[in-house]
Image (cartoon, rainbow, N blue to C red; front, side, top):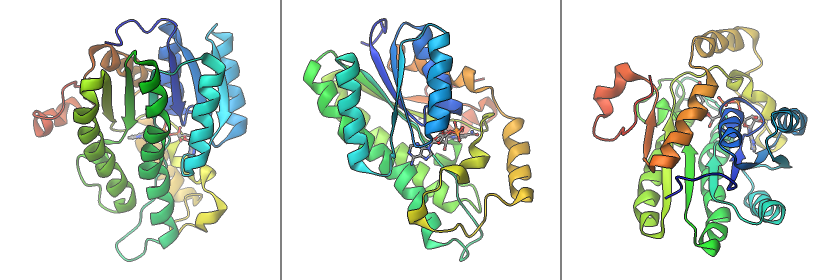
Length: 268
Ligand code: NAD
């Protein structure tokens, strides 16, 4: 199932940057068509242009994953553009946290809306389209290492990512008989711009308690992330997971023993 990806179509949220864009590069190199979805239109244009320069058939759609309708429209547009969709990466994510009692309601709402409900809406919007063609498919849901171990001071993020791991396990079992796989990606630190995720914050969630634009916070987060994995390595491993129909990808070999029973695919 899904071994031959040539000519098939992948939809990637948070596709304008970081891990999402790296997945799109890997899909394109495997001969897939790609639809990138992102809330940031400027980055989206740059990302699509980069893929097209690499001779990858790519298009972009502005999409807010915290909005069910927006994902339903993106699904319609993907099918209108490419005819069918096979791989859906629910990958867009943001980070918010703070000491216990100091996290603003808006930070909780924003993180849960994007990181958790974004995965629910993406799955529910695309599942009917995948079922309709009957050729099988694959969902890749980006959680985090913080979806498997608690990261103190990042509870909204941790809660959202634990939920993504749990939901993905449940869906994998339900969808397997239909030839539809579900993988969950649990990276450690990856060199992306996630430390700037305040850029994607929407007005409706109000100001952050821990202002992510604070230079000291940005710098500390940047240093952690800069020491991380190359996002293109993550993209390549995602492709392997889809082809092998494996459930888990996990980035940190030194932590593998903690997750031996659940982590099928350890990323060095
Ligand atoms: P990134 O900031 O480079 O990319 C995230 C993308 O998501 C951005 O392009 C942003 O505009 C987009 N986005 C944010 N809110 C959105 C919304 N409401 N609707 C649509 N798009 C939206 O970060 P990344 O590191 O590539 O993050 C991708 C995923 O990987 C996230 O789910 C993140 O939690 C996860 N992750 C990242 C790391 C890491 O170290 N970078 C580690 C573990 C997990």
